[in-house]
Structure formats: C-alpha cells, structure tokens
Image (cartoon, rainbow, N blue to C red; front, side, top):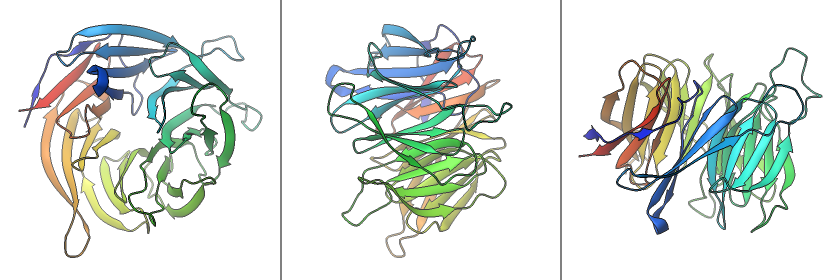
Length: 334
C-alpha cells in the first residue's frame, strides 16, 4: 500500500508529453533532483527527504536557427560509470549539462536537410549505456554520443538505423552476464521495438514488430522488455528472442510512462486514464517464463498524467506529474 505524501510545488505545470518526469537520487548528499519540462523551459528541483525545496533552476532550450523559441521534448539524467550528465532534447537540438544544470558541456544541432517542409523535427528518447549516451530523433535514427571521463570533448560516434518512424523512448541496462547481449531497447511511433547490443560498435540483435499502436514508453530489466502502448496495454517480451510472454490490459487509455525499480523488479505504469499501477515482475524458477503480479493501483483524479517515476531502486516511493498540475505528487509505501 502507498499513501499520499507532501507534494513538491512547481512554478508551472508539466507539458502534456509522455515520460515528462526525470528523477535523480543523490544518496551521498541526501538529496533528490526532479526535472519537468513545459514549452521552451525545464524546471530542475532539489529536494531533501523531508520534502524541503532547497534549490530550483530553470533551463531554456538553446535557440539555434529560427525566430521562435524551441519546445523542449524531454529531460533526463544519464548516470554514466564516471559522471552524471543532464540531457535536454528539443525541436532544435540536444543539450548536455553537468548534473545540476549549471554548465552546458555540449550542444548538438539537429539536421533539417532530410526533413520535408511539413515534417516536425525533434529529438526524443534518452538513455545511457556504458560510456555512451543515446538519443532518438524524428527520422527514426538513434544518435550515439561517446562521453569522456570529464570535460566537453563529446563526439557523435555512430547513428543507429532501425526504425521507420520517430523514436519515442529508449531504455538500457548493464549486461547481467558475460554472454548477455541485450543492453538497450528503442521504441517508435509504429510500436516497433529494436533490441541492441551496446559495445564499442552497436549491433542490432532483434526487431519486435508493432501491432498498430505506438509504443510510448519502454523499460529493460534482467533480459525482460516492458513496453507500454497507446492502447493502454503493457507487454513483456524476452529481450534476447523478442518472444511475447505477457500481455496486460493495464489501462483504459494511452500509457504515458513506465519505470522500473531494479532491486525488486517492480514496474510502474501511468496513463491518461488517471491511474498509476505497480506490478511485480519475476521469472518462474522452473520454466524461466516471465510472471507478473499486480501490487497497487492509485487514482489521480481529474488529472492528465504525463510522468511517473520511482524515487529509489527499491520502489518504496514514486512521484507523478500531470498536465495543468502545478505540483509533483509523492507517494510512499506504508
């Protein structure tokens, strides 16, 4: 069971975008950072365990070419083995900052040459794998950036081609075993999933076809892909083979966010039907098949939910954002 805790005030509401909440735990200084976007700006908040707001910062998308300010599409902290970077995507490009948002270390402008005059150009979907940061684009390509131990000498090392439509989300995890090759999964507007091995050169392992609904959010945990779709379904696949194990009619409307608590295998799903659900993932000891159990459901009345994240890897608390909601809602286990 979870109960509502003291909420965190925002200066403005969250935009109606999928995956519109990023959370970074800083155990060494007992702080939690939250990132939410709306229009051309992103809000960064630093909060103590007692929900005391210590710092609030606003980031603006870099202008680039054009007269109107670019709209931010996503913000996400990438935890690399040697540093943490804050990545911000927009309709003009990709910005990378030091973790507190104080210093921009890299700016990558999007290439408009391949886009038609009526096509929207944007970046969306962010994840880190090893010393790489991967960012999806409107064209279906995934940009792979090689990140140094320190400094701003960031290099675009590769472009992954596998999606026919715009990338929606990216998830990754470290390899659990020496022979495990499913490091990253990417999703797009057609519902197609691509599973990649993330090495010095990325390799496409398998493609999981869509079924007519966009995949809005995706997670990867111990060789299990959890994918949320525009029809409210959550599907669990075997990452190595693409085999569908479980299909859950989890929500009545489009799913807007998934998150995983890696220590316990809890899956958080949030959707436009105002509900947030928590599921427990596991494998059968005998057959190795993926199993799922419903643990908790929470309604956020009269709110178009657009982001949800666990606070910690044990899944003991989570946060929710909503369109036209000027606060971050917090829930903790009883």
